[in-house]
Image (cartoon, rainbow, N blue to C red; front, side, top):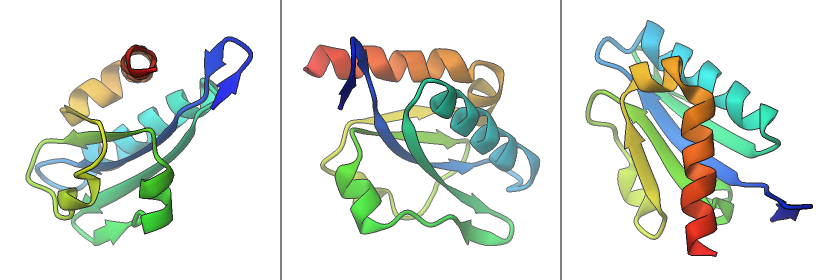
Length: 113
């Protein structure tokens, strides 16, 4: 989708860290905030100590332009993304540089257009 000269992305993904506590949720918050600030639509599932939260729907995945995995451990359900472009990064990068990650996704998407 385009807004003027800018691409509006639909992003889905998963956040999960080694302990499943702090970094999982910090990464989700940072990435969601950066994507929303860029005008993008984003849905991020978390897989933490209390299980899966904000589980992605089949419709969200089908409509997504790309998938962002902010993970430090194995996560369940990645087969759902088999037909999508996937970027995998560690949670600490998502926390430290969320705007740059969203910018990189925009760059990758524009290469495909």
